[in-house]
Structure formats: structure tokens, C-alpha cells
Length: 228
Picture 1: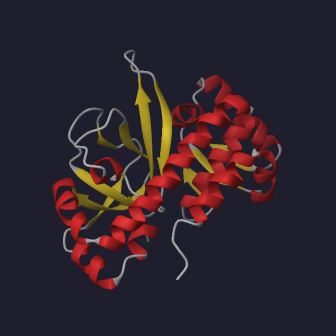
Picture 2: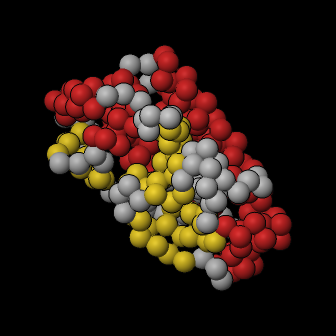
Picture 3: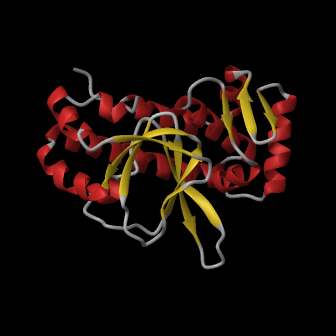
């Protein structure tokens, strides 16, 4: 289940669930386009979402990833109707969906959810900031291992769908470079990569290949839900 939703007190969850629906998201399904109204807010459960920044030529790079720890609704939470980024489903799976207009209306009546979203926004900002540093300071292999670990944390089981095209978005590099680093990680028997599917076969090895950015980001998300 989504971490934010599962942490809500019963009365707030009941109020929110009246308008929540479970949807199946396909690989590459666009949830909202840049500068267009955000029609729905998504709380991923087994799906993983990606925020892509795009330039005038149509080239894209990932600037944020959203899994079962969070929501695509931060722009709406902050009073915005749109955002310059595109949001799409990077790893297929299920999510809970809520109309953006309902979310905007109800959030003022849900203090526990407001508090959680403030904490999540802080974690998400730290994640994005750490990714910027990581892209400048660390090798593509370290960055790839970090990204695979973060995705592994967010999915059910050890195997998930991921194309070279998406991985190139995530790492901000060419597909040819992605192919080389994926082959290297596979030769070390940390992963198995075939036809758009990745299986993590040696989690410890993958963690040893990743930079410290993974542990820093993971620790922040682990503290998202305050202790009671």
C-alpha cells in the first residue's frame, strides 16, 4: 500500500477513500503534460512514476522519481494547477487516483495528510538535490546502481520492467552508454537484464557499486513517517 495513505488516521483515510479509485498504469503512460492542468493526483502502490524535464527539442531527463512512499500531487498541494515537468509511469503497476479538484478541496480538512505531505515534500526535495550532486560527482555505473536500488525498494519482488530508453532518461545519458553499464553490472552478476526486464540478483553487490547518495536518500525516506 502507499506509505502516505497507510499512515493516515482512520477518519481522514475514510474521507479521502470516498473519491479514491485503484487504477492500473502501463509503462510510459502519461499522467500529465508540461504546463497543462493536472487532472488527477496519484498515490503509487506498485507502480513507479517519473518526472521528466524536457527541452525545446523534445529531449528529456528525469528530475524526480515517485514510488509507494509518495504522491504525484505536490504541485496541487502547493496550490499549482500545472507544472513544467511531464509525469509518466516508469514502472507499470497499480496506484490510487484522486481527482485534482477533490484533492484541492479536501486537503484543508485533512491536517494529518497535510503534515505528511510537508514531510514528503522535504524528502522529495532532498532526493532531487542529491540526484543533481550525484550526476555531477559520480560515475554512470554508480548512478545506475543507485537508481536500480531505489527502484528495487519501490517494487514488489526482485524483477521489474525497464527499457533502455527509460534508463537513459533516468541517468541523463545516451542509450549506448546505458547498454554498456547494464552489461557491466550483469557481468558482475548483480543484475540480469533482458528484453526490457531487470532482475536484481545480488542486492549487496549492487549496494557496494552504488555511491553514498543511495544511503543518504534512503535514510531520508525511512524517516518520512514520524515515530509514534
